[in-house]
Amino acid sequence: MSRAFVKEDAQGPDEDPPEKPVSDQPNYVTPRGLKTLQYAEEMLLAELKGFEGAQADEARKRKKRELERDLRYVRARLESAIPVDPANQPKDQVRFGATVHLRRADGTEKRVRIVGEDESEEGGETLSWAAPFAQVLFGLKAGQTLDWETEAGAEKWTVVSIAY
Image (cartoon, rainbow, N blue to C red):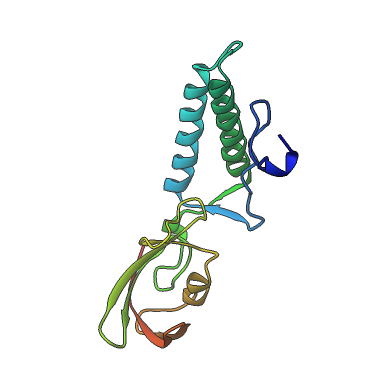
């Protein structure tokens, strides 16, 4: 078969999976985020124990390499972690670790919790501190407003409350 018909980026049986990209942003973590990373490390180590010794099965070899890759990622995130205790943040301002209750001009309400990159969920209530919306929120106090440009147009949001 010609090489022209072989998928170039397909992982062969003896190839390592691609590394997970590690953010170049500071790795701020909440106490919960740090515990989550530590738990992930424990779980990966426990799962890897089942792969000790020589493995003849290619699928098991590949799975072991993926687990090792994931462990390298988690350990890199643990080594670079900068724990931030939300209890030490100014209570009247939006900062890392805050849960912010917002109200849009049309009455729509939303809560976001500003967390580390590894804790954030796409479309969820947790928002990475590095996200543009979180950056705009930093420093605001209850009652202050912000204008946010979206594809649908400008939105005006008011900070209703801040909790840690």
